[in-house]
View 1 (cartoon, rainbow, N blue to C red):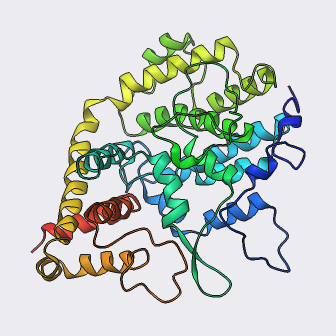
View 2 (cartoon, helix red, strand yellow; view 1 turned 135 degrees about the vertical axis):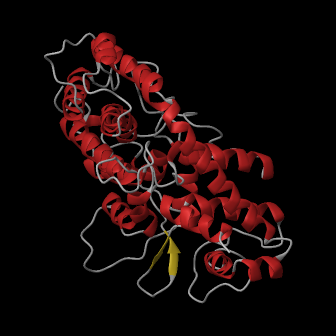
Length: 393
C-alpha cells in the first residue's frame, strides 16, 4: 500500500537513527555542503575508482566485446532504479536505498560469481577463511577504497552504518515470502557467512529484494542474445504458465514484481509478494539455474577464469619469498602491485596516506590477503592483460 512503511523509514524519528548514521569517525565538514548523510555516502561511492571498474566486470556472461550483454554496472543501475521505485512508493528513505544499491556489489571480483568461487578456494587454502563478495564489499569500503580529502590526503570512505549494513546484508536467496529488518545493532565484522542476518533497515531489505528482481529477467534476456536460449522460451512458458501470445521480457517482469510487492507489503507482513508472484519468482529462478547458469557452454570460460586468477595469484605469491627474482621476471606487474601495496602496508608508505594500515608486510597471511584484495578489485580485462603478460616472453 502507498506509504505503508513511512513510519519505519530511516529518518530522525526512527529509534535506530543514531545507529544508522553512525560512522567510525567524523567526516570533515564543508561550509557549502547541502547533502544528507546518505547523499555523501552515495557520492563517495560513485567517485571511487572501484565503482568505475564495475562497468568492466562480468555479471553472468563473459562477453567484453558485446555491448548488449549486462555487466556489473548495469545490474547495479537496475537495482538502484527498482529499489528507488519500491522505497518511494512505500514511504521509505530513497537516499539510503540509492547509496546501498550503488555500492552493494562493490566487492565483486572479476568474472562474476565464478571468480568469487575461485578466490574463495584460494582464500580457504592459504588464509583459512572463505571469500564472499558481500563481506569483501564491506572490507573494500572500510579498508581498501580511498578518496582524497580536502587537504590532499588519502582517506578511507568512512560510510554510515546503514549503508555498510546494506552492503553486507544484501545477498542470500529469499526462501520465505516475508522479509523484515532485524532489530539488533551488531558489529558487521561478526558476519561469518552470507545471509546470516537480515538487514538492519527496511531500506536495506528493499535493496536485497530489488537485487533479485533485477537479475532474473535480465539474465534470460542475455541468454537469448548470446544464443543459449531460444526466443520462443517454450520451456519457460510451460513453467510459469504463460501462453505464446504474452510477452516475456525484463521490463515487464520488473514492472509486475515491483507493482506486486508494493501492493502487498506493510509493517505487519513485511516486504511481501503475493503467493502467485512468489511462485513465479521460484519458477523463474529454477528455470535460470537449469537452462542458463549450469549450461555446458559456460564451462570453457569458467576453466579459463580459473587459469587466469590462479596464475596471477601464484605469481604474486612467489614475490613474498623470492622478491628479487620475481621482480626481474615480471617488472611491470610487480611495479604495479608494489605501488598498490604501499597504500596499505606498514613499510615505506606514501606521504599523504591517512587511511588504515591493514597489512603487516612481515606476516605471510597478510601478504596473501593483500593479493586477494588486489585481484578482487581487478576488471576482467585487467586480469586477462596481467595473465597475458605473465605467460608472454
